[in-house]
Amino acid sequence: MAKKRRARKTTTKPKKKKASRKPRKRRSIVRARAAAAVAVQFAGFDTGSYPGDAAIRAWAAQSPYRFVGFYFDAPCHTPATFKTWSGKYPLIKASGLGLIIIYVGLQQDGCGQASLSRARGLKDGQDTAAKFAVEGFPDDAVVFLDIEHYDGALSAPMEAYVTGWLSAILDAGRITPGIYCPASKAGEIRLATGKEFASHGQPGSFPVFWVAKVDPLFDPSASVPAGSGVSFASAWQGRLDTTDTHGGVTIRIDQNVADSPDPSRATTDFV
Image (cartoon, rainbow, N blue to C red):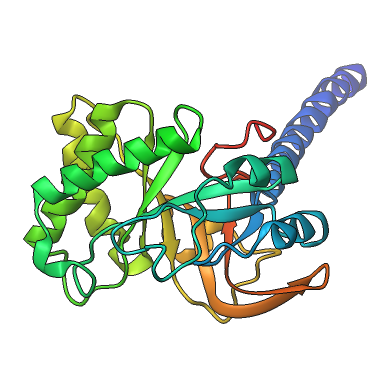
């Protein structure tokens, strides 16, 4: 009987060891994946007027920013008010900076609010596509329609304008549509634009979102887009009108973070 007891002890020990090892491996894999996900973020900046060739080269070489905003000449962002970015794509690309491309259309409150309609949205979408081709951006690059803060809910005329712009972009077939908007308005705008995608035979599709939300805890070296509170955001503008100096060049900028060093996918050096 003593021999039988010894046999039971030797058969149960290996089972206990195997059961204790497996959970440790799973936990370590989960931690490694979570750490890798948190690490994916890139800082960028945007400024309304083109700051000059020397400034772009200096900041590309000596600043922590990996991408810059490129503004089309547009209804609410004109050369009469801002120094144009037109024609500067090759130089910016050669500098090594990625891009986040912006078209400032009509607004619910302010610029052009009396002219909002689907027809005007279609017209401005076609204007976006034409300027996209002239600048020489690659197919499928993302262009963000700039929607500034507005009071209350998204109005019917503004929704008609936005979905008209989106319709023209989808029909053009060369551009990936994006939306820049306040984080607090992203949900309702996403819902409206999702309907337009569905009407073009793409149910379940949405624009790429870049959201704006000023946050005192925003840190361009560490924050991630989801920190804006918008889980589907690919970029987050978290600090406005700040002055920064790099390479002896000072520029007044807005600071951003994105999940790519080239949020508009316009610079082929970044994959």
